[in-house]
Image 1 (cartoon, one colour):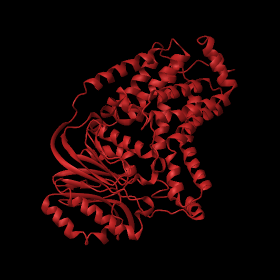
Image 2 (cartoon, rainbow, N blue to C red):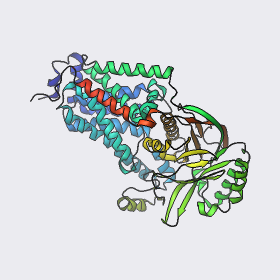
Image 3 (cartoon, rainbow, N blue to C red):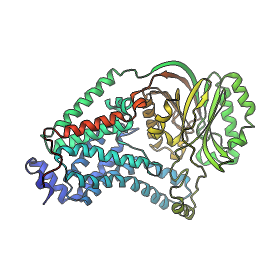
Image 4 (cartoon, rainbow, N blue to C red):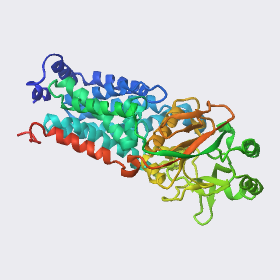
Amino acid sequence: MSYTATFTTDVTGWRLRLLHSLQTRPALHCLGLLLAGGLSTLSFAPFYIWPIYLLALSYLMLAWQGANSCKHSFLFGISFALGLFASGISWVYVSIANFGQVGFAVAILITFGLIAAASCYWGIAGVVYNTLRRRLRTPFRVPLFVVIILLFEWLRSTLFTGFPWLLPGYIVEKSWLFEALPIGGIWFASALVLLTSAAIGMALLLAQHYRYLLLVLTLWVGAAGLHFSAPDYVTETDTHNVTLIQGNVAQDEKWLPETAAPTLTYYQQATFENLESDIVVWPETAITYVLHQVEPYLEPFSKDLEHLGTTVITGVPVWDEERSSYFNGVWATGNGFGVYEKQKLVPFGEYVPLEDWFGPIFDLFGMPMSQFRKGPANQPTLQAGELSIAPFICYEVVYPDLVRAMVRDSDVLLTISNDGWFGRSIGPLQHLQIAQFRAKEAGRYMIRATNTGVSALIDTKGQIVSELPQFVRATLTGSIATVTGNTPYVMHGNLALWLLLALLIGLSFLPSFRLFKHR
């Protein structure tokens, strides 16, 4: 029996024609979803046109309702995701082509492989949704849509260290739903986005199913109230001056032996010009010498800083003799101390997943492979005077659970990065947006120092206080504040998400308490 037949008592006119079209012309809708996914990138930084993503997801919801086979559901899901990731993470190609030492064809092949791998999660989500929604009554299909996509986005964010980029919640920065972040974090915001889209899609298909639209309207009105009168989850206390040094060292020159000494000299001179600051931050691997080699050389510099009350925090490679391993590290010196080793490595950049399989492929194409290893969990924070600073290197800031785990013991968040790998693409601007979300979730100031930009100071509301333009050698000095208190998200994690999902399931039982259709 055609799936359209199950809706004939509720669906008429153009809605019935749409369902029929989804069944008889799936290729056309695959193209439509590919376009919708591609346009959805405009909802994220640096464009912020968030309604596009909401409507595109509503289209996907409709497509999954009309799909009469798991094959079509898979194709609809993967088409949407291919469009989204092909446009949204196209910056991966810039890194591979410019610095991967491979030709155009190989760079395209590797980029497409990464995009396809990320997209498969959405395709498989479509299969699972199609399988379950046939057994569930119509009201359960909205929460099912939310739960299934959240589950597969979590898997995408977790497996093989994960790739939690372009999560649904990242579209909310310029909307009222941005206020959901300190309450429940990025996953709560993502659930609200998915719920909004699913409710719109179901209401378009079945006009009488308005219960979720009423819930969505209530949640958006509540978010608006928080937007215009946000509670103070944290209270700012002491202020401290911070200087960020953006060296703007070309990526193809950064690791050359003849560049290392002049670059280090520049950072030292720029630091001496900003000794009024309590903290001076250099970007990721600003020092390209290994720490144990350069530390004796910098000892007089460090003692001068300690005497003057200034802490320098810099990225530097770390060699551990006992573990016979290199680590991508952060080092605090002068009026501070501590070393942090990066825990979340970039797949195919800093490490190779399934190295026994992929290593020979990289060797075949002559692609360089990093020797960095993963740092241990539960590392102590860095100290800068009396401040405790939670450091994150580049890619690590995209992991909300990692940041939350380190927030409780810290006064300030710090992320250092080298986004020069991605040129003038949208990647560095998306990366900056993600740092803003972590600051908003945690209710902490975020210090962001990068090699080529965007270096910025971000306040507890997730707003950029000051920033440097990309691709300039410059310094940025501003103030940050320590805080007392914690946001609900820091205290309770994903509790708000679980409560929302429980509410959705509860609404699904109204007015009927039947879960499964009669056979």
